[in-house]
Image 1 (cartoon, helix red, strand yellow):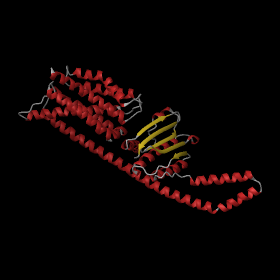
Image 2: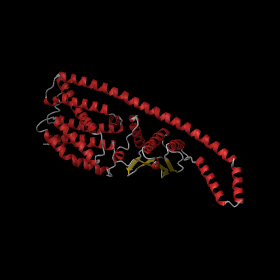
Image 3: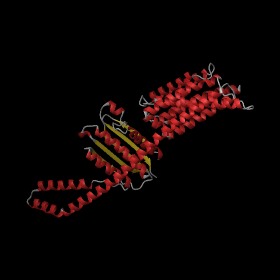
Length: 437
């Protein structure tokens, strides 16, 4: 009785774990704001999974392993993620399939290895297929494995690179599908020595594919590293030149100050108050244009924002800002550079797509209660397609653009920050909060 109860409990736990951690992975990895608390979200996933889990477990009474169950799991997880996020999560179908295929392949590989151990050993015999204690322990191990895979993939960049690169995503999908088709026969007790040899060949090819993948990843990361280094050096140079220009213009204005006073004095003596006010207004406007520089007390923020203001002005973008005195913060300069530079790059790129009279960027940065608060608002095109694809780029370096967006999320996650955004009729708003102490 107890063995029977243990068996069915672990059997259902296996499918629950596979579905639950898989859905959690994709919801958190490609977050779409759903305004639901985490515990509410967890309950929704569990309740929605009950019919599918029951069907998968019930299917065991008729056939030990079925590829049809694999496709049902893929279909359910895809539908759940899409409906739950109101169809905002795109390009996830292949990733969900890769995840399910991968988890099922782990199952098949372990069974194959145990079969080989049983064949070679005179003493050990573990039946991982039929109902029993060994099967129950195996199901518990698989359930823990799903959780570990969730933690690894959540923190890693593998899914992000697959998400951005259609070719590699399709290659991995097809390769995992082939593995499922080839190796499910082990559950039919159709085992032979050659099956393990096929597994070896399959895994070697997988490592080769992963090696090519890793080379591609490192190449992309190196390009991003060089881009950030170039950006930082350019910002430092631009900041120095801007300071030098402001100093020279201030010196010239101070040198001409006496002449300006003489002109205004003469206008006032001649009772030409209107002309005097216009002259003073022109003088003040010129002074403001020279001294309009961000001075937050945080050098890296000053360098980035001043550089991006100059870039925005060159592109006829109205850039306004309110930046408090921030002083020093416990965020590395490199991370702050990644965060602010990519945020402002996205805003500038979006503004370039709209009419000149509507080009607007507003940046607000303040420090409050050991939190750094960043708010950015920029104009976007009014077309619905533009709203849906705001985070896409029209430039050639799509991999770097996607990596830049991911780098923003990585910085926020690294410092346990929070991000919210909204897309209105003709503008985009982003709010970020980061602990700084």
